Image (cartoon, rainbow, N blue to C red; front, top):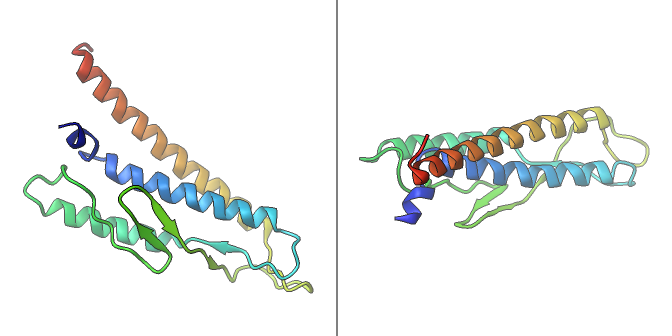
Length: 144
């Protein structure tokens, strides 16, 4: 019964989104930390690929008799391996930016843009999870 509360509705999707944005934030933070490291190649996780496998998992879930219940079965990609309790990533080098004399193709502005977009997506997912738990708490208290 308890498990049914946490794999119902939007919670499994929001959980995967927060896992992805957390890992991407770590990768982007590494890029900022190594901005002036010679021969460092900035890396990133493919957001389009993540969105595609998440969309496929949601569509697959909608074909079930109860489309809002049960686990979300997300397929692995070359960069992402979805486990029951987490996400393993293998970031790929991003080939954006200008190649400098030290063989580093850094682009601080684009990295900061990706970091800001990722932060917004993460905060949105966390806020939606918070709202879901607030609804559960209201139901448990049996008061509005």
